[in-house]
Amino acid sequence: MTWISHIAVGTATAKFFGFNYYLAAFGSILPDLAERLLPGKVAHRGLTHSLALWSITLFLTWNQPQMRAVILGVCIGHLLMDALTVTGVPVFDENSKSLTLFGGKIRTGRPGEYIIAGLIAFVAFVLIGYSPFASSEPKPPSWLDLKEKGTIDKREYKEKRFTLH
Image (cartoon, rainbow, N blue to C red; front, side, top):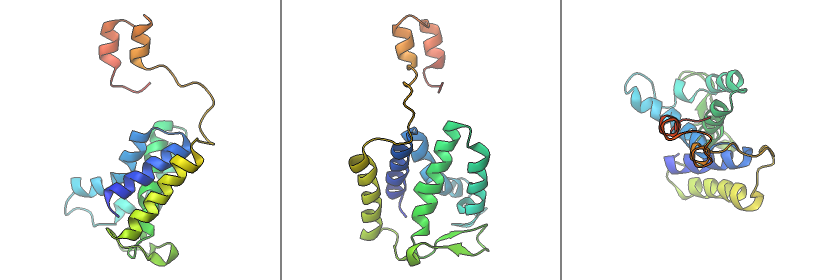
């Protein structure tokens, strides 16, 4: 699958579950980024695409919302989409059995890929339109909101403006 399809499905996942779009989009391309950062050290669709590795990681990070957003981006935005292709995704590593969904009929870069990704994004953003899993709690104020209300000063705002809270 192409990165645009991974990102579309990753952000649709974030919309559905009420997660941060950027974190889920990052997660949706993380397996391929890891391969690029380690050229020649890992096989394409090898350990970086392992269903077992990412499932265990999801289980271990479930109580950390930001990590959960990234790992669900990996699992749904990346692995699910790759499992629709002819090659599928490995259960453990490049030498293990691969899992394909619906017979692995989708080919990377072909119209079917974009139709599937587009339909998933359409359902998440248009038909559902809201997240049944998102918290009904109000979102915490941004660092800029806190500065404008006088809760934090200019120095603290400059220190924290690029951090998550």
